[in-house]
Image (cartoon, rainbow, N blue to C red; front, side, top):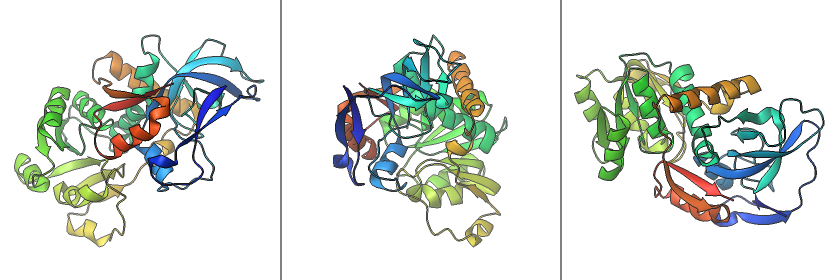
Length: 323
């Protein structure tokens, strides 16, 4: 019997329930993936809480790593015993095992274990597309990264330094500031400071050409005030709630700014795109540019507790759920 998370309604972490199920053999085009580790991501809380509407009842989770133990008809590229990861597609990664479309899988290098893969496939792919495809950061640019100690944030710091950027990171505590400095940030600001004023001070009044903001509502004013003329604000997350009611005129008043609200899943649409992003992440890991930091682990059935810790800012780096 497999253990599978289920939500029948949206709400707080308490809505996460568990079913015991017998998995049927994988159908055509599917494989059965036995999970060695499951990744926890902020998007999981958006699904659970209703910010991103779901058809209910629903599973939870999109990221996991493990080993293929059954292959459905028509699957030619995967074999029993192959190691694979998934960070997109249908929800349901909060499970000891599940049947998943083979086209959603990415290959894992031998040097990357399941915990590491589950900790940073999605976050690393997010950093990859944000820096290289969305913002297209160039050497010599200065970039503001909010929540720089978070799962995506600390990967962004390392990725940006490898790209030749100067990095200004924001954090909530002195302890997190030390970690972000260790990741390579050139300047670290505490969230209680006047972020925009400090950014202007650091940049000689110019502001930054790129803001990478995973916080959302709470940091939107600082992002606007920190961007340089014709700067780009990439609002990629909603940790404090979504940015809403944006008056386009405000972009003109702050210097003809550009703003985008991207999602990884528009940059990882095809199997080739997903594998290419994963390969970039694994390459950056091999080169030492990024370090997947597993700050804490929870048992899979403690997912509700993990959600509470994540939403209260009580986690550091990445969180992994262990079946």
